[in-house]
Amino acid sequence: MKSPKNVHLMKIKLRNMEAKKLLRNKKVIEEINRHKWLESEIAGYDIGFEAAAEDWLKKHARVWIAYHDNKRKQKRSVK
Image 1 (cartoon, rainbow, N blue to C red):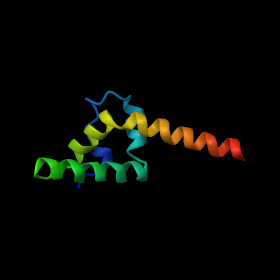
Image 2 (cartoon, rainbow, N blue to C red; image 1 turned 135 degrees about the horizontal axis):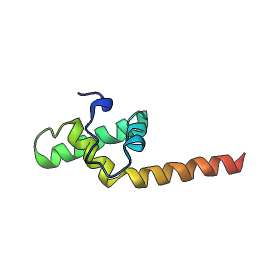
Image 3 (cartoon, rainbow, N blue to C red; image 1 turned 90 degrees about the vertical axis):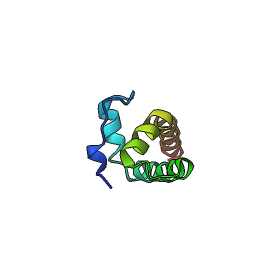
Image 4 (cartoon, rainbow, N blue to C red; image 1 turned 60 degrees about the vertical axis):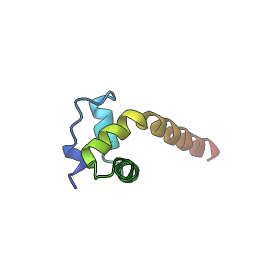
């Protein structure tokens, strides 16, 4: 499997720095690997990490960011 740092980010609509930051997050990599597994099952072959990462970033990253930012803000307000 290729390192997340080597994932081609030029076609991704997220800002490059934001995508690179996400790809350093262990939880994001787990989500991408889960996405890779599901999409590979649907396709009937291994789609590869790069394709899965690009697809996940396009389809799910914004919602993931919003959810986790909101969750973090709620934890701060409780303290």
